[in-house]
Length: 114
Image (tube, rainbow, N blue to C red):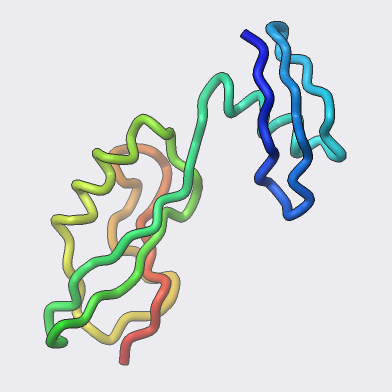
């Protein structure tokens, strides 16, 4: 099950090829090789979303995962985020959900709201 990928670890966008034995070619750095192996064995993604701000009219605060999470848990995590609301003020890095669904990733605020 060989596969061709474009590396997204850095802006260089190396064209990667990974064979059945998980040998990677086309990478300019070791991070590209690790990305290709992870993408075939356990793909992960960052999530960005929004949460409601209770004490502000028509206001939302942007949030994201603190680290990449398993791709298969994206929709379950989005459902957890949908249940949450916060009060202003918010500060970048505030934790909204700690260790969401046991992934080791926190949901954190990415927008300052005064």
